[in-house]
Length: 87
Image 1 (cartoon, helix red, strand yellow):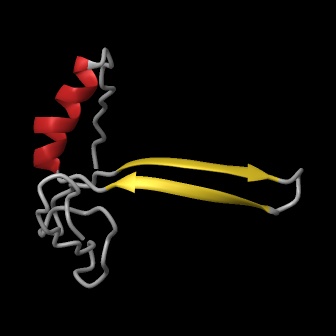
Image 2 (cartoon, helix red, strand yellow):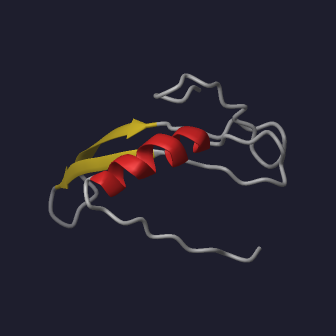
């Protein structure tokens, strides 16, 4: 997996050290760094389980997220929402 902007490779190792995590950018199991920008669109057919979805996504490393993505969104008038979680 690579960052769509700078092409940096992601180590993609999950907490157990063996599982490829789709948007994980750190290589240390004790660190957390996930990032992905995505849009999921679809249609359901009534209350039944039928339908479809189409997901479009960009994998972006934390460096590009802070240096490029956040400034671009802010330049468009958006303000980020941030929160912290004690683990």
